Amino acid sequence: ARGDKGTGRALLFLTPEETGFLRYLKVAKVTLNEYEFPMKKLSNVQSQLQRLIEKNYYLNCAARDAYRSYLLAYASHSLRDIFNVHELDLAAVGRAFGFTAPPRVDLAFSMKGGKDRRHNGQVAKGGKGKTGKLSN
Image (cartoon, rainbow, N blue to C red; front, side):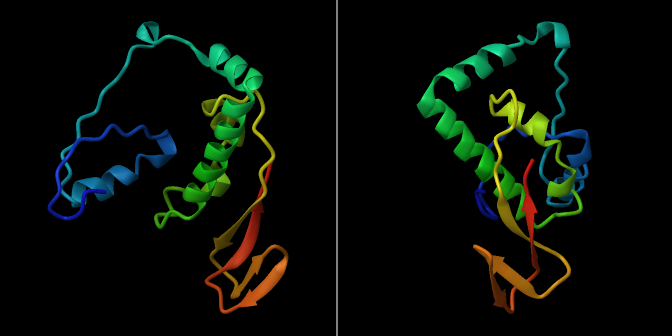
């Protein structure tokens, strides 16, 4: 995010399925430090988060938009062998955004394979893939 010569620090949380991404970071000579957090030292704020998202309309809308954006970003990631949107646990992702059940979000995204691309039900020729829908 900082370019070729930029420096900075970042904290990255990966699921076990996403740890293959670390190979790419090592090739790019990114210094990595791994941290483990004992479960007994972590506070469980999940129920509080879910109540807050459920009761506050504006936070609910923001969480829904963030959830949708996350899924779109995940689906469009160039490292699809690691970040495979079809293997996401949508219920777990929804909980991470404060939902007791993930909101229904229909997303059109490009998949490897075909040459047609759909937008709002219309087929556009010359696309990079065929459209799939991701909904729960």
